[in-house]
Image 1 (tube, rainbow, N blue to C red):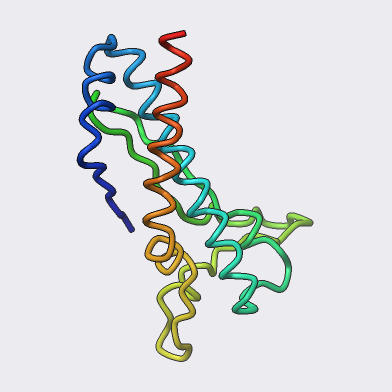
Image 2 (cartoon, rainbow, N blue to C red; image 1 turned 45 degrees about the horizontal axis):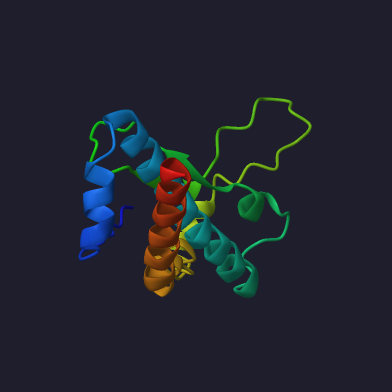
Length: 144
């Protein structure tokens, strides 16, 4: 699942970023995207709890953001989802949330109870505001 946010306007921010070298620019953009992802992640956890999806705590604990390798100096990408894996045979902790997609998308026998998609939709403006604030803060630190 992917969502894109494009921060348009902000001519001053754009000019300030363009004046920096590529390494610093990437670092600032990555930092901003991580801050924005934290907002979505927090809201996804709240929605999952409010829908009573969790009984063991594994799903909520494993909602995570994974930073993708940055191939461009103009954007950074983070995927938000649920960490999971196949439990090892005989493992004491069978607390793996492999079932998260069944809640998010539903099954033939269970209606969907999404928590990640609504988190993206509900937090768009807050994510943008958080990212802009982080970029401004990092630019100030760079120029200081």
